[in-house]
Amino acid sequence: MFARGRWVTLSTVLLIAITSASADFHILNGTNGRGGYAAKTVPSNHYSCLGWLGASVIRDFPDIDSTVVAFSVGNLCGAPQLNFYNNGNDFDVYIDGGDGSRVGTCSPTVGAVSGSINGGSACPDGYAVFDGYTCMSYICN
Image (cartoon, rainbow, N blue to C red; front, top):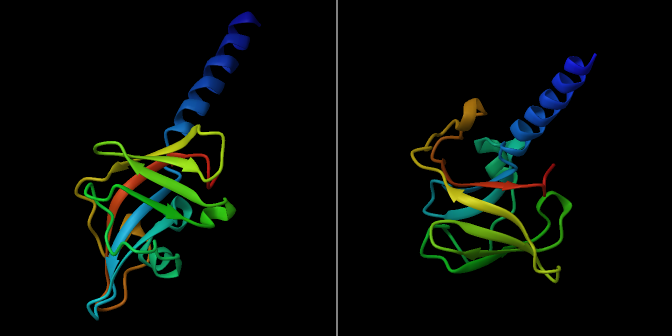
């Protein structure tokens, strides 16, 4: 019985660790094939070209990369405005007007370039979507 209790505790801890390690949302950069570029935030459960097509544009930035100092995103997964601040290679995420605690971190996604992201729907002709950052947070859970 005691061993079983320890197994349940250990399996619960492992489940929490695995769940916590999965991405919550992504920053995707893309082009519409007509010379227009857009950076968008996309929840992980919509991680596809069609998810990017339906997402809101990050204002003032056609591409999010390490040269961007800060940007904001409104209404991601129903959350209030989120502020992203560059801390070197990553972006730290905060709730606008919040208590100052970091609610997420976005790290560069290396080599993930595809018209059909993660086996999702392929992009229409002329569109290309690139995974720029993977964000660990609870915002879209």
